[in-house]
Length: 281
Image (cartoon, rainbow, N blue to C red; front, side):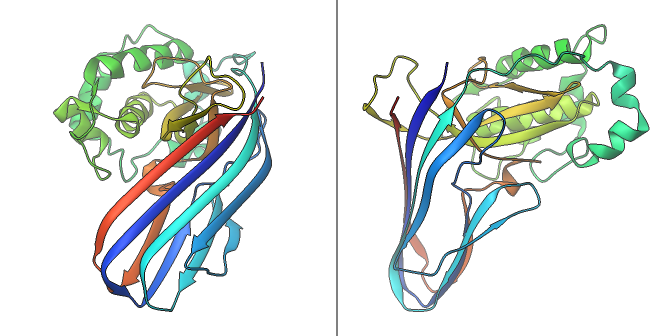
């Protein structure tokens, strides 16, 4: 089954004092890949600014802009229409542990096997990974990781922050999709399985009617290399399908934050983010 999804992502900042200059990067635009096609996309900035586009190291589309006139509010609006497809097929030739231990494989996926900003492979992560059955093959281990993460964490807003690491989330025992993804990455990498963080959107209703506008949010899930890339939504314990829209894939959230920037002035008084998702067809 295919879906056509409309996305409107608005991020707003208010400042207690005028900001005289700011430099920003937005990563909120979906990419075209083997399971989705971007039909339309646009990023608008208020106050108006010249917006430059480039592809970063990880293949994410970045919109960069800077402002040099005093302003007390900044609003970034990303809109797009994407056609998505159902869950990808399982790898035809699943990798074995010997395949994953091969020097060529480890060299190719080195950045997705080693510690990253939000996924330190410390004792807490490795101890959690020790609970995985060593008799399982790599693909079965991915499924076991998805189950284990939901045993380690309870979905609960407000218990973690945007800077919480995988190790922190395990200690806290709860978190949101970003934390679920980071813990899964830590467990997979601890077992020698290349794994990457996926940032995007999840349409909230499988039964949505065309034209129905629903409140949504940014979402995160995981892909693991087991002979081919295997996707799974560890937070929801579900397949990745037509309701998932990919913005980018990288080591962890640090590579894919929706908005990064620095400014002179302020400080920021409020931050509001709204995401509207519409099934168009």
